[in-house]
Image (tube, rainbow, N blue to C red):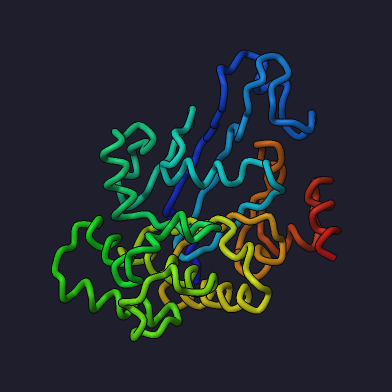
Length: 280
């Protein structure tokens, strides 16, 4: 059960620009112009002035079409992209410290210990020539835990929770199906009991039946472990199934946010209405 009293993550004014940037970048891009490319300097405004909170045990969704900026938001929060401006706070790290201002080394350490990521393409999140157990062990080691026996024990537990036979712990993910690779990725992402797990189009590219099993696994893990997640997707069906609240982004801007059920049943912004109608 989510607890809206316990805030896990706060994001304020997150912006990311690809290009030189000029004074017109913000004023001449966005949903009202139907573009995120500045007509003056050609800078791409991937996202601008993004602000939201994530609470303990909740799954927050970010939805939008390709190029809307949703993946840039998650990549910036996972420190794979350097934010151009903005603030990020983790309540259980140092609630008064803007994490975007940390050194690269400190960001890397924080990411290893307190954050998790599941990518659309398992090749990004796994070393396919490492064993399944080895991939999980790598994440555990990066979090500062070195007891070999305990690492293997936890890897076995996580694989079992992710619906992969422990007998396959020493097999290579390159020999697994796409759905199994995603489940290993999930096990790896949660190996250090992260404060929040980012999931980027986690079910895209999977067969419908496999997709359903992966989504059910995510929902079950979130419920059983009270995990906090941020789910990025272009698919409102995924958003409907997984999330408590939803942010809708277009051309790098938030156009609507609120409880997922309310947004899907009574969308206010014309872009959200278009997305919902396309689902029906």
